[in-house]
Image 1 (spheres, rainbow, N blue to C red):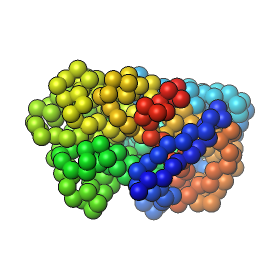
Image 2 (cartoon, rainbow, N blue to C red; image 1 turned 135 degrees about the horizontal axis):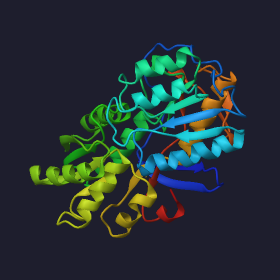
Image 3 (cartoon, one colour; image 1 turned 30 degrees about the vertical axis):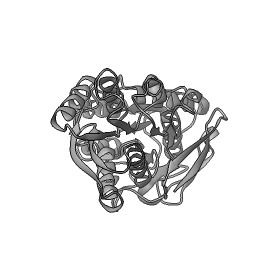
Image 4 (cartoon, helix red, strand yellow; image 1 turned 45 degrees about the vertical axis):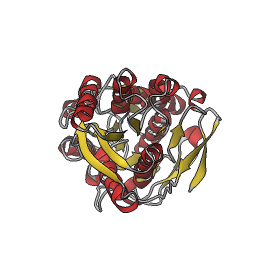
Amino acid sequence: MSFTLTRRSRSGLTVVATLTALALTATACGSDGGSDSGSGSGSGDGGGGEDLAITFIPKNLGNPYFDASQVGGESAAEEFGGTFEQVGPTEATPDSQVSFINTATQQQAGALVVSANDPEAIGSALEQARDIDIPVVTMDSDTNPEYRDVFVAQADAEGIAQAQVDLVAEQIGDEGEVAILSAAANATNQNEWIELMEAELEENHPDIELVDVVYGDDDDQKSFDETAALLQSNPDLAGIISPTTVGIAAAARYLSTSEFQGEVALTGLGTPNQMREYIEDGTVEAFALWNPEELGYLSAYAASALAAGDISGEEGDTFTAGDLGEYTVGADGVVVLGEPTVFDESNIDDFDF
């Protein structure tokens, strides 16, 4: 079964892609709980809109995915008259973001947007920010819900997981051994997707066996080395799923010059600019992702709405995110960007991020 996803980007380009058996639903992520302590305007340059000083703290710097979300965040801040800064660690480790959060709090940032490396490790630092009414938005990878006001999710978690399973199943004939090359072992989004992929494989793909899950820590060289080790340890491997843009690009780089090119399928989540050459040389047939620039753009607007007091993160709150239009906050303070897009040789040249 297949159907077509259509979405319009901020540039006005309509994107059409076909996903096999992908059913996206707007379900909530996280657990009950949460605080309203960050729903007011920031005590520094807060207030939303003009003069809002917004600080983005990604999992790590030098990551093309977060370079793209930075472009979106900067664009949004320019539109609503705020200022933008992106700071963060060079390595995506559980506690590496704490010092950057503490510094932003001490400087009384107007709002924080954080992609969490761990659901718990940065919780105390975020609570300190919210204690002085700095709104906290998590983006891409969530904390526990009580540590933030709103989580801007890329897409529905079940849909992301199923899209990747469906892609690998189609490419390996729905049978054989597969492995997962993930990012950090503590990454909230990665672990949720892996759990959902395991359930999807068990329930609907009995002839596919998940033989290993390894972690490249969103580091190019480590992900490259883990790919090599996977193939050495599993000589019958039919496919690799890498739900991380750093991982899939590193795995593709390894496969492209190895005897496994064209023999071992690779799919997951990647950016078109990283993966274009591997689509063109046949290393990769298809992969998926949402637009990370739009994710950063939406997250900045959510932060602005919180700082202005237009929303508090309660279910049913609505706000307008510039050219993306109106969004509604769902259960547990979750805002969903939209559906992922599948990229292959037919459409990859339509994108530049």
